[in-house]
Amino acid sequence: MSETLDLAKFESQLNTTWLGRAPGWRNELWETIGSTNTRAAELAAEGAPEGVVVLARHQFAGRGRLGRTWVSPVDAGLCMSFILRPKTPQSQIPLLTIATGIAVADAIRDVSGLDVGLKWVNDIIYDRRKVGGILAEMPALTNATAAAKLLPQAVIVGIGINVNLKPEEIPEELVHKLDSLARIKGADVDPNSIAAAIANQFEKTSALLDPSTAQSTAQSTAQSTVQQLTDRWRALSITIGQTIVTENSERKLEGKAVDITDSGALIVELADGSRMTLHAGEISIRTADGGYC
Image: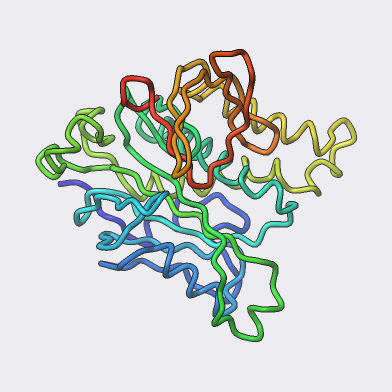
């Protein structure tokens, strides 16, 4: 029988200094919840500090980018969100998704032995099928308490991973687009170990965005630490080098993904040789055949 999420088991595997260890606040595990991102935003509005983690065994209103829903039957996946109050300039906030993707890929490899790839900007892919996704949001918190208004702006990072999702639980129209770690590995995977490994790895990757990290190392600069982060993402990317179709409400373009910028935007080379920079926003990308990159 596969393991299910258990707060004590998750916390016992943490090697973090601040993530999952917010002073005066408890992490939460819900049997069922609409969205862990929504709950984390509620806690942030109450004044919760950086580091609070919200987990759920089941989401019934999980969401991804562009308003998409996330398939998450009971105990089939990892639903995880945490509160950040980053010190980085707002221009670098998109890099938090890059840092999270690296942390998730490293965690999955450490726990399951599987090497997944990263599709710009927020998908976790194995053999052209999606096994997970990331959604970073900066909620307005219009109902924030007085204490919350004194804290830095909150960013909520949500992660959904198909850990033990069974093939029969995947909707027919998504059978060729989704997969799970357990099916790929041929054995159940412990979601507590995956969740803790993500937290442990995220502290390492996100430290490269902390200005104090660069200042504490004589040979390093803020630019070079960001370069370390983007280089790690490039090594895991399944998007760079692919011919892609990018589409939003205004236009549809085809070109070759050639790189990302130091702020995490995607650089695409068009047929005429010109280049354009894409920011996550409302953009959707696919390969020319309509599949995942």
